[in-house]
Length: 281
Length: 272
Image (cartoon, rainbow over all chains, first blue to last red):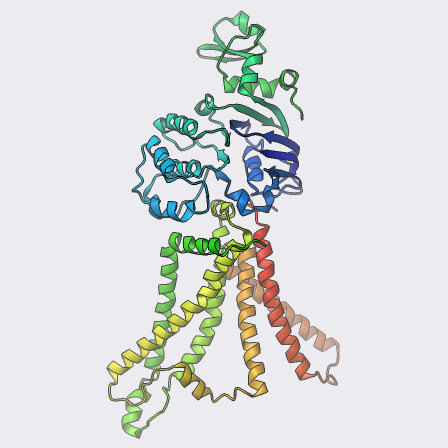
């Protein structure tokens, strides 16, 4: 669905490239988490996928079409929810009327359903909403367009506490086999149970590019107070409750992924991840 | 270059609906300014409407404010068209605005033409409407103040043509008209291009750039004149007119094409 082929990108000639010879493929039917440190190039990567930035070399193909061309048939099948965005100061129904026509698969029923998930009313003026409410409305519109590729940059930033759990429900209800949702975030606890696929990038490398099933097949995530067990772990992170550790899953025991610990393992011991998942640079 | 007229109409409608307050405010500002200027013209010629008519029994077949009004309308057209064209890419002034514009599912040509239609073509309609409203307001106010004056006339296009006493078949007039229109379009296109290069504070920056280029050109010309003796040069005036006309019209097209390509290559983050 999305093929990133040997992309090199830098913000200026003098600066080190944010991404260099970077390649990645993403398929349909997955909620993909894009994780990385500050400045790793997560937002840049999303902009490159959407065709909003021009790579110095390489290309991004979406269904075989170079996204940099920004063709209507590509743009009407993808949507980006950035961290910051502008909404016109008009009534929500006017906004829907004027913008939905550009998206052939837009569904008003879905829009209303998603608004209900976020406990939002459709009879509102966008100029009178708080930033968090605007984000909810914008995300509802994004999902209601029924585009095949939805890119979200820090989607839970600015959401209130109920909003974060509503967000998980919202994404789960809008997901289908033909759609790919890429979520870039630091707020890993907001999305950890949503993800089907995890991509961790750091220093220009894809440290991990694997689906959650294969991760839990090979790794076991455990919270323990047993320091001896922690010392045998592939990676351990101390917390007030003890240790969050990752063990090799030799006994095929199911566990829930702890994204923070997984991120720690990937960034501090990339060789282990590479050995287990055969990640290519 | 993909162009779908249905989608183009939808973009124009979206632009109008989502920016209606700003556009309406600007339209009202233009109409208001033109009305004030026309009223000032009426006040400045008040002696002809009342006193001189009574003392000298002066009867004019055309309104005495016709020529000053015409000058104002022409200068205003140059100024306001440049101002309007400099709003062409105001939807690219910030990262969030650029994202909304660039991600809209339409071709670059459609997005460009939609803005061009509103801020360049739409300007003409608005400007003519503003001039008509300004002139009607001047006429109505003067009629109510000087109901008996025979010198208060409505300035119509036919009155302007009659006053200018133009021979439409004359070659000189045709040249003058062609160059005038060319200069107007070239001026407007410069500010359109300026908007593509500097979306923020475009009018001031473009004006500054034109001023700097003009000063440089004048300096270079004066240096060349001092260095070389041009006293024996007898330029072909007809050739010069053709060159000037060609420069203005080809320059206009060049500026708009360049503005389009500048927009087409835009990115969400302006890189160095």
